[in-house]
Image 1: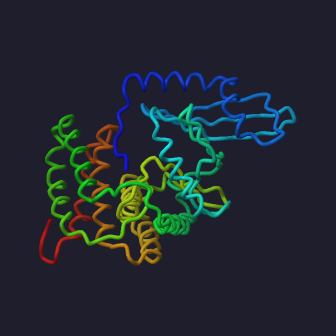
Image 2: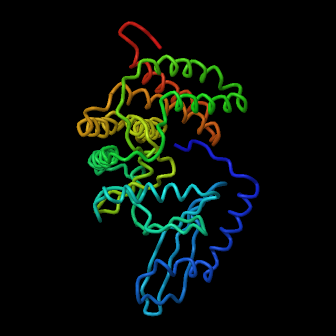
Image 3: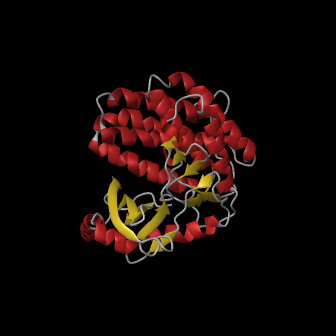
Length: 334
């Protein structure tokens, strides 16, 4: 599981140059010729940046033929060869996928010379943005997709242990304390609770995981629910994925006054459906990773520093503390 990658100055510079080049119609047409349908004669192309990071970027490429036909793709380019690892894992996952059904959106092509994964373009709305009566059923479907991934039987890499995940969380919080010392009194008790909770985890059967599972990674097309982005794929306790999803959902509900009333119902929809499909996954471990993810999201809030971030941090800390306290034996506190 690749928690953090810092590209070199040379890699960042090369990536920026590639981003500029691929927004030129002639350049992107040359790249896409290998994936265009047979008989498709491209006459125009447009590339629109969707997300840009120091180590990767995503473009939407739209191509039109002389006959007025359109093709669209998502192009994901990396600063290093990590896309090759995702491509290998995607090929293995493809054998477990159902065409045109709920599940992962997988790349169809990898171009090593461009360090580029090419995906079919999928139109839809993020599950995180759906807040109406469709939400409970879509959360249940998301849980089924998660369970299907975890049942794939694949071993994509070396295991990521709970100790490694806690260590990465501790390192992240240490960076947080250096930049915002005032947050230390909030973070330090939570880190202590994580260390205590670590020894209370139950043995787990490891599984291939998404690694960054959240409602924002699911896209609803109107007919099917699609899971995007394998940049954090790994091999660990599947409770990590489910706990991460629940924490992200909880964070969204708690910090948005308009959604707070839905918190308990929405969390239960995903959690109950997931545990029904995955009875061997430990509810205790799931709760631990939910608490851990809430702690990590405090770091995210500090980095963004919106106007209400101090109050938001306290709200997340309360929820993280409550989750970790669920692990404690009766009559004890963590």
